[in-house]
Image (cartoon, rainbow, N blue to C red; front, side, top):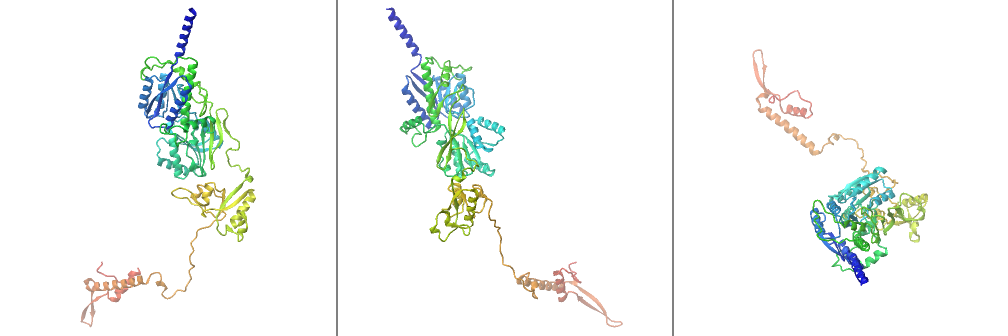
Length: 613
């Protein structure tokens, strides 16, 4: 009888202990209002991990504007009042401080794949690792001394401060540009200004939506060609549409945290593609974004943490009223610290690799691949982790100005048929390769190859053009286009050096300089004739001068006839006692002509009209 009672008591005690862990756990979710692939990944993660546990993760979802602090506060307090054990969600620059302060005050853990923030609040579990050190190590690997750092102000200034501090130590020249309020036209003006200053090394550190907009503007103004080098500070390099960059010639580098060739990711993608696209938005016809992979791993972290709590038999049940999150002073949840510790102790492998956190909730011991866009596709050039830093993979080291191994490859030389520079030999049908051509440029190419010591193959440009850029599509044709789009290595031709061409290709010193001249027929000297003095003016002009001269003289004669001031009385003595009076006028027709001639020649005259005085 006593043994039976003891057995019943032990069973009841064990049942109480095991019953301390709830069979269902309320998990809060904060997602943007618009349906997103991340929300589909969150729902798929819940259905996937709920099948392997003795408890169920049940979500309480709030779809809000994550940039509205008031809406986020109401949603957070609503979830806390419903007794959730943790919250998974997103934030931006305007709401991150609100969420982190609530989590720290109420001891409620917040798991997020949003951009990492530099905080010591251990209740914020950040699924996205920090790229500060990886970015700086990559800059050192490329040996950039001058570059432009374009950053998203919505993500804070922590990365910018780290870049500027390192630049001060290593004497880098950094131009920092904020794109908080920049429009599409602003992006175009920004890159045009950078091009004028010959800034060809650019780092773009912003979220995926803004990065896509910037990439489109780079393509629209033709700054995605050879000579430009970009580093995209994003963990989803393979998520981007890089087709137009691939064949344009620009050097593009980025980071990738999801390894698409890993067995775990391949297995996940098989299940992911089978989902109903109507029920799970963003599945059909879209690549798996790295933020969606982090969301799926976030559900894994929650599941592993609660497994640990159940295994260690820690009582985390919420009894009674959950309390008011706006109470002053705030009343923290007693069991929240246990959940926070369990989340930080998670050690697992997910879609984003090793999942591990430090005491502040930041990802640690992770590895990201460094990828570079080549003409034949994306290629891995190395990887980065906290221990080894950046490690370049064998054979994929960055190619600088080293010319070693130049003799081990054949260079493609493009040219154009233009006598006497490049011509086909008369018997070119019977010849092959470079022997089919002759001319100054052909001999010049042969001498350069002989001097440097490399092999080459001459090829006539396909469209028969020198090279010009289309004003609409910004695409180059001719020999310049073949150089820009990596179809040829060198061009040897009578190619004119212009400012537009110098922006995309490098020219050697010209082998011929031609001045622009105007040619005219040499004038023949002739002996001057009797009337050569009339040559400066036309016949009509001389006639007008003569008629004007005669007309002025006649008018002057007529006026002097009618004016009483021009008549003078003179006395003459005919005899000893007789005198006669006679009236005279100095301006006769001859004197009028003489006065007009003197005035025309600016020489003056002995007489002048009196009526003008």
